[in-house]
Amino acid sequence: MGEVAAELYTQDGTIDIKGNPALKKDTGNWRACPYILANECCERLAYYGMSTNLVNFMKDRMGMANAAAANNVTNWGGTCYITPLIGAFLADAYLGRFWTIASFMIIYIFGLGLLTMATSVHGLVPACASKGVCDPTPGQSAAVFIALYLIALGTGGIKPCVSSFGADQFDEHDDVERKSKSSFFNWFYFSINIGALVASSVLVYVQTHVGWSWGFGIPAVVMAIAVGSFFVGTPLYRHQRPGGSPLTRIAQVLVAATRKLVVSMFAMLAAGVLELVRLRTIAQRGLYGEHDVVPISIFWQVPQYFIIGAAEVFTFVGQLEFFYDQAPDAMRSMCSALSLTTVALGNYLSTLLVTVVAKLTTRGGKQGWIPDNLNVGHLDYFFWLLAALSLLNFAVYLLIASWYTYKKTAGDDHPDAIAKGGAHD
Image 1: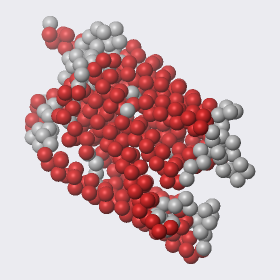
Image 2: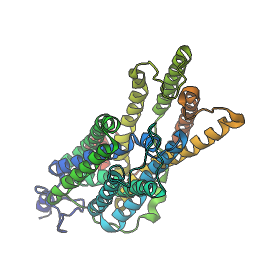
Image 3: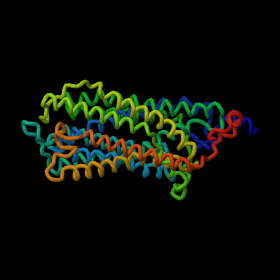
Image 4: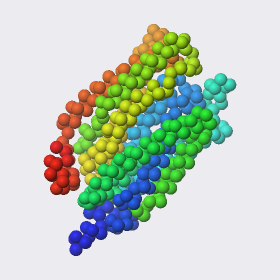
């Protein structure tokens, strides 16, 4: 009888939307994943389509200087990666991953809708002079920032849950499904990058050449498509029951939240070299005006983006699987959120770093490293500083990794894993 039940139902405790034990043939596995992956692709397209060009929006429409715009964006970006702690807690303790994702997507859409209105509705759009200098009223600024932080709250319920929810569709006690779970994380990362690629190319072009209302309106529509995609798959999903408050177990995995590779250091070095080339060209041609176009090929930017992309490839997929496998069963969303807090801390530290560097390097009336006119600054020095900090980060990671003790997972008992000497030797 037990063998028959094992063939019919999942053995990892998952249930269907009605609360019944999940049938293998009707729920989960790859049949449920297209809806989750499509949702993630659209959500990332909406997020990056709105955030990639946000510094320029702050400068062009909100009348901010370079440093102020960068700090506002990094503060907001940090919040986007700290709010997952809220979403993860609700998912693991009370709502479950499905309802947390569903609820926070609605908040997300409200934020995108308000941001679109702030760039298209008369009265919410700042008045701009003929030279493009805009002077938003306090109410107009408030509308933009309320929209941005609604988006930050909305993404906080999606980021920590969606990868774990996708992994929940595969029964860890089934050999075939357990192997498929690793492939899911690869496809999950692929869907993120497809969304980011379209956003960083097509939507940035729209924002620059068509207008901000279209540039922010399209992400709002795409996010609505993401919501539709997610709900279409509802009958097929498997669900893990919420497991109570996970806060008492957070200490077990905090140490793992420092994972990062030294590869990012080389991206900063490449960026520094590019800035050296750019400044040398400026000096040779006398192009010191703020709006002067520096005649160097855009392909100089390829190395830094290629290297930072390689760093993400090396870490992201493995990190997702690491946190899912190593997390206590009832707090997988929380552990995913903890991994995202490293990005939040990075954003907040970026704000602090830009502020400190700007203050120190402008003493005595100097231009500083990061002036409003970057053609007379020294952004290259800033990239060298980031490279040094990346190296320090890698040293800390090596130290902490040497202390970490791996949790034994279900796959470690499998004969193949034993024959290979264990999964985590």
